[in-house]
Image 1 (cartoon, rainbow, N blue to C red):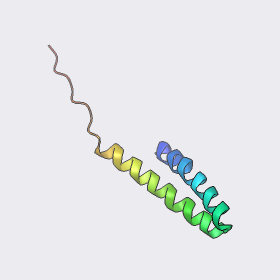
Image 2: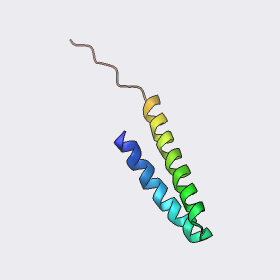
Image 3: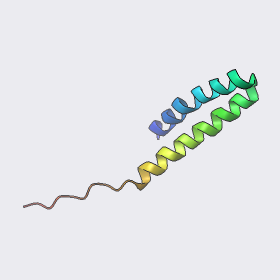
Image 4: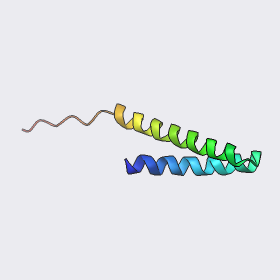
Length: 60
C-alpha cells in the first residue's frame, strides 16, 4: 500500500508543478495533483492485481 502511495506522489507532484506553471492557479494544480496521483495509484494497483503469481514448481 505504501508503494502505491509513493507512486501516486511521484507522479502527482510533477504533474501539479507543470499545471501550476502553465495555469498559475493553485486550484488547477491541486486538482491535477489529486487526479494524476489517483490514476497512477489505480493503474499500478490494477496491474499488480492482474499479474498472476508464478505457479509452484512440482517437486521431483
